[in-house]
Length: 397
Ligand code: ADP
Ligand code: MG
Image 1 (spheres, rainbow, N blue to C red):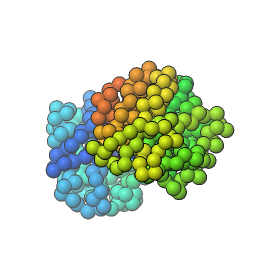
Image 2: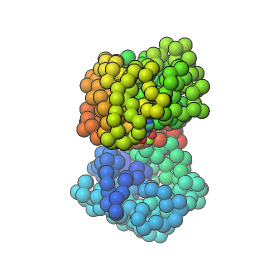
Image 3: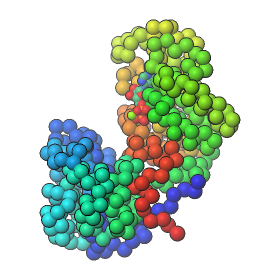
C-alpha cells in the first residue's frame, strides 16, 4: 500500500475563482455557543491560504443531525461569527446552502472574501448524495476543496458528490491527516507501535486486523483488554466483557502471533466493586479478580511495560482509552500512556473521539505529532478503507 498522494490547493491557481470548500465545522455546541472550536481552528490554514491566493472562498459544512429539515439550533451563523474573529475579516453567514440566496451571496464575493453556507444537512439531498442537490452545490464553485477529514468516510453530496462535477483537491488539513496516517500505515518508522483501547473489540476489529503484520507491537487496554484476557482463560469477575467477541479475540491473538506482531495484554488492572468516583479501587494481577469486582483501568505495571515500548517507538498510533478515564480513580492508565506517547521521539498519532478527549484532558496534546480531527474517519482510515471523500480527489501524477 503506497501512501496516498492527492493534489492539494497548492496545485491550483485559484485567483478570482469561486472555491467551494467542504470544512468540518461540526463542533460541540452548548446553549447556542461553541463549546470547543478545535475543528474551526484546524480549517483556518486552508481558508487563509485560499484568501491570500485571491480565491473567493465559499465554505460549507454540516452541524449535528437535522435530518433534512431546518433546525434553528443547528444554524451556522454563530460559527461564521467565530471564524470571522479567528481570521479577522467578515464571514457572511448565508441563510441557505443552495438556491437564489446562496447564488446571490457567492456572486457578491470579491477576491479574498469568505462566506459560509447554511448547514448542508438542512436538505435531505446532502446525506442521500442526491444528483439534483449535488448539481446545485457544484454550481456555487469553479473548483472543490475537501478539507473535512472528519466527514470524509461519508459519501455525501458536499463531501463526495460535488467532487465528480468540479476539479477536486485536498485542503491543507486533509493533506496532513492522510499524509501522516498514510505514511504510518504504508511506510512507518520502526518500531511501529499501536495502542488500541476503548470499549468493544467489535468496534476495533477492522483496525486490529489491518495492523497485524504491519505493526511491531499492539498494546491492548480498555474494556477491550477484558475480552482478550477472557479469551486467554482469565476469570474477569463482573468486568465488562464483550461475550460475542471472545472467539474473535482468540482469532486475533492467533493471527498476531503468526504474523510476528507482538500483541500485548495488561498484566495488572485497577478493579472496583462499582463504577463510582468514591468506590474502593484496588490494583490486582490479571489472575486475581474477585467475582464481584470489575476491571476499570490498566494497572501501573502494565503502564510501565507499555510505556517502555512506547518511548522507544519510531511510530505510534493510539486509538481508544486504557480505562474509564472519565472517572478519576480509573484515569491513571490513560494518563500514563499519554505521558509515554508524549515522551516518544518518533511520529505520534492519536485518533478517536474519546481518545482525543482523554488526551486533551491531560494537557499533553501539543506534544503529539498529530491529533486527528476525525473520530470515525480516522478509525476507517486505520482499517485501511478508502474514504469516499478522499477517493474523489485528484491523484498526484
Ligand atoms: P474512541 O472514541 O477513542 O474510539 P471508544 O469509544 O472505543 O474510544 O471507547 C471509549 C469508552 O470506553 C470510554 O467511554 C471508556 O469509559 C470506556 N472504557 C474504557 N475502559 C473500560 C473498562 N475497563 N470498562 C468499561 N468501559 C471502559
Ligand atoms: Mg468513542
